[in-house]
Image 1 (spheres, rainbow, N blue to C red):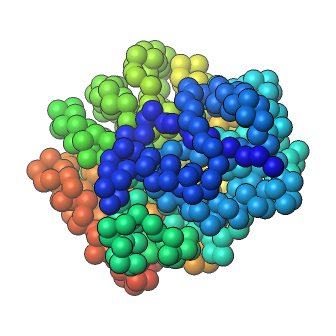
Image 2 (cartoon, rainbow, N blue to C red):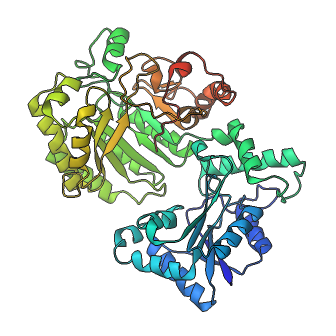
Image 3 (cartoon, rainbow, N blue to C red):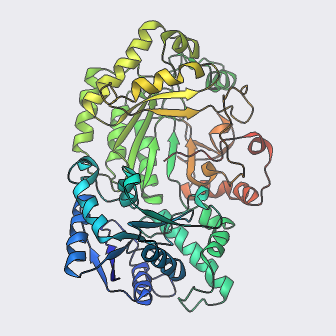
Length: 519
């Protein structure tokens, strides 16, 4: 059987040509892998999945190829032995699609039968047209296969150990992944004593993964999620959050009565720092408080969206959502450049936490039946203005577990106000600060180094940066308006080192949020 290699050349892969791997780039090493596999290789560019699949099928036919080995072209760790094993399995078992399961992204290609490639191309133009018109992403082909997976003969090469919980992704498109790849490469060179060579075949994929799992610089690069408080005010007391009581204790004032906010000048300066440091990230305006109560909220959204690598996330009670607000938001979103970070421009979660008004009022102390109607209507208003970017949200706990099914069935319908979008979150007891109220324990059997220490930075309205959100209004490690952002970020390195060594202290010992993640 004849095969060819197709590389997708990602125009957004910013670091693919940086010669940091013993004088070679990720693209150089990717091509070396192809030469070692000993199949003819080609490069394709495309603005959507459908276009890529169509081009790949045409190329496949012109070369009389039976299958395609597909990969992005910025993967410095594509493994020869794993790839050859996958190709052999694909041919032996007459598979239509073959992938590696349990490994981090970046070690293996995908293999697609020529006929299957044609079927996928047609699917992306017909029943999965919306999917096919989306910009290319690294899991696009796999996700398209999943829409009708039982119709395909799928072969998976399984890892001896499941490395997916570490959420590694070794490519060179973004700053964070590039830093991760560099750190792993240096570790490998140190391990095998070949710092002046590019042949890393002395280590297996599992050995490389093991190295990465113990490496601070692989686990922690730059923040990908900034949780920023832009307003102190809240309309009610969320019974599943410790904010109101913590605020009163610290400020001797109820957050229901405060007007304290982060000012626009400080916020804009912070966003500039974030864009320079992380390059790509999601900016939440909802660490605490009701973001929309900040009179400059729309201007803050506009500031974030001025950078194509940044997106906005807001958790709101929805009570300040009006037609006028939505019209202004729509204009900002429409005029903002397209994102280069694979996220939507704006994502807004409306905290409902219930299917009935009675439960809503119980969980949102101080809210009324009218407030519940406002919150539900906010979903409709936002969906009309920024379709596909609004998410009714339900924090699952003992108090509302009986309404979970009703919430799911209603908001899951495409004909309902959110068009089928919604979020169901786990309950957080904030490291024992609140009573345990989660109806089910979903934590993994083996604890991994905390995702939030690896990827999140929480910032209060006065600029104070915290160890993590579990500290509520304490655990300050610096101030983003006064201190260097990178220096602040590295203040928690020692804490993460403890996690790597499975040494958990104080709040970390009592916390079960380490496996949850934001974007």
